[in-house]
View 1 (cartoon, helix red, strand yellow):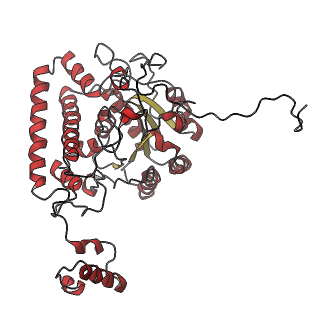
View 2 (cartoon, rainbow, N blue to C red):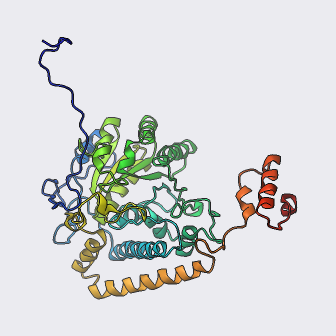
View 3 (cartoon, rainbow, N blue to C red):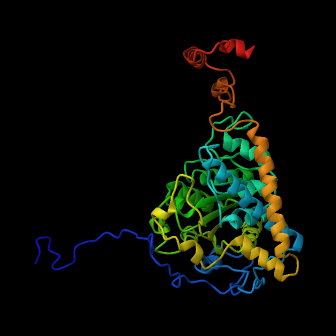
Length: 429
C-alpha cells in the first residue's frame, strides 16, 4: 500500500483539449450530430424556461437539403424580406473583401472579416426592433449595415482619418452609433454582456419596451463577465438576449478550451435556469426565427434567452492571424452546414423569387457600391498619410472643463513636437 493510504489508485492526470484536425490532416465531420431540418419542436414563447432545455442540445434548422423551408420554426417571411436579408448579407461580405484588401495595401492597420457568419448578425438583427439596443462583439458589422449605417462612416472609422467620428480613438472595426442603438465595441472580450444586462434591467425599471441583445464568441463564454451577466439576468428576469456565436475557433484555440468538448454552449442556459436555444447559424431563417422567439419572450416579461449560433469561421481570426498554422485547410470546404449566403440564395431560387443572374448582378452592384464609398473615404485620409484629427483632440471629450494638469500636458506636448500651434487657452478661444 502506498504511503498516502490510497492503495493502487492511478495517478491523477490532466486533460488538455486538442482539436481534431491540424494542418495537413484530412477532415471528417461525421461525428457531428446534424439534426434533420424541421423536426425540432417550437414551444410557446411563454413556457417555463426548463421546457426549452431539450433545444439546448438539439439544433434548430429550417432550410432542408432541398432548400425548402420546413417545420414549426419557419418564420414564413415574404419574398421582399428574404431578398433584403440576402442583399444585406452579400453587401456585408463585399464590404469585408474590400476592407481586407485595403489592410493588405497598408491603408489601415487591422481588419476582421465575418465570412460565413453573416446570418448570425444580419438575420438576427432583422428580427429585433430597430431601437432595441445591441451590444456587439467585433464581428457584427452586419448589424450596422442592416440598420442602414453609412458604409462611408464605417470606412472612415477603419482608416482612423479626419472624418472618423470616433476621432481615431478606437481600433479599426470597433464602431459605435447611438443613433442606430449600436453600443461601442470593446476589445476587452465579454465586457459588453454585463452592460447589456444592465441596459435591459434599466429598461425594465423605467417601464420601457426596448430590449438588449448581446453577441459574444464561444471562446469568450469562458470569461467571468459572461457568467456575471447571466447571473444578474436570471435573478432579475432581465429582457436580454445572449447570442453566442460558436464559430468553432477563438483566436487560435478551438472551442474545447471554452468547454465545448463537454456539452453545447446553449446548455449553459440550463445551469442558470433561463431559456436556451441552439440554432444552425448558417441557416438565416432559423437564426431569424430563434431571435424573434427570444425577443417576443423578453417583451412578454418572460426573461432572458441564450442562443447558441452553431457556425464556422471561414477566414482567419483577423488580418493578424494565419489559420493555416493551426487548423486544416479542408475544414472550410468540408463544413457540413454550408454557406449562409448561398443557402438563402438557393432558397429564394427554389421559391421562384431569385436567379443566379440576379445574384451575379447584385454582387457586381455591391462591389461598385463599396468601391465608391472607399474612394470617398480615402479623400479624408488613410493610415500614415497625415490626414487625421488635430492633435488637440486627444485631450477632448473627457472633461467638461480641462483640468490644469492636462492643459500643461497639452501645451508641453505641442512644444515638444516643435509645432507652432497656439496654447490650449487660445484653442478654447
